[in-house]
Length: 194
Image (cartoon, rainbow, N blue to C red):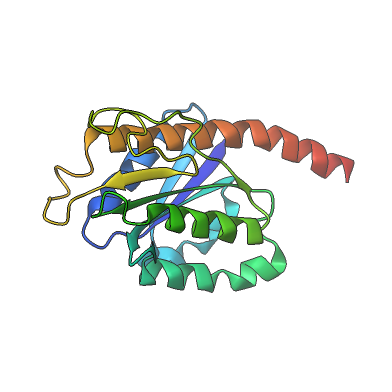
């Protein structure tokens, strides 16, 4: 069984909806166990996060970066970094903001650099850009590094993010789970050879 942990923060519910779409995608891959971990519960979930084959990070983009609660979680991983507990795990990320641009790329870059510091292997979307004007298109926001979503500030989580952004999040979850299954075999071979 391959395990995927999705660690996320959601201030207004939009990123939680996106996290649930990522979970659906990962869970659609046979032999995958998926656990959603809200950042306010991470301290009770360290064991599950540490044991995961893949960790997907999700945060809203606030003021051009990760949210403060998510940053607290990132900082709390320094002991795991020192022990290299997450080295060679698969990693990916997703973000959501009220602004169409909202500087979401900066958030994804921060998440990927964080994963690199932990020695993780980053998985991007692997999608060409979709049509921005078609709300149901995959990757309509044209991201490569991870899944982006746009949720207008006055939109309820029941209607935003839109269908294309949620389908993109689901695609990311599925892609990460597939990569984790493939990577698990490679990790076993390298551990045997060491």
